[in-house]
Image 1: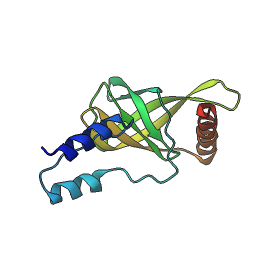
Image 2: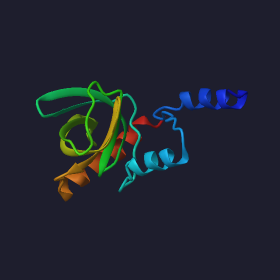
Image 3: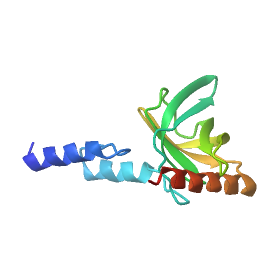
Image 4: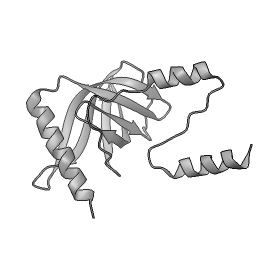
Length: 145
């Protein structure tokens, strides 16, 4: 391995939420890129927030990687999920009144790997979407110094 590659791998390991994926060919790389979730809305990164998820008589937890009003990504999941699996996910978010509110959302898994997955929220009406957006905006304000 070249020194530059080792340095790049060391730097990428420090970035929160990014995990390199190694492939053997350009075709494999393109397949990985095509499988990734294409966000339909502005993504918010909320650090140190544990989520719970359940589906088909199994329950797990994980850490929120990022979230939008259309879906979210979770890493360090305690259970492996399958693509297109339907789950319920509980995401605790702070409201404008600084109270922790557990959003319970139905979702469909759009991307799944070992200990991480991405979901698209389903059956989310406009009122729920707006409330979710307000909480996400408030979370960003809370994390600012």
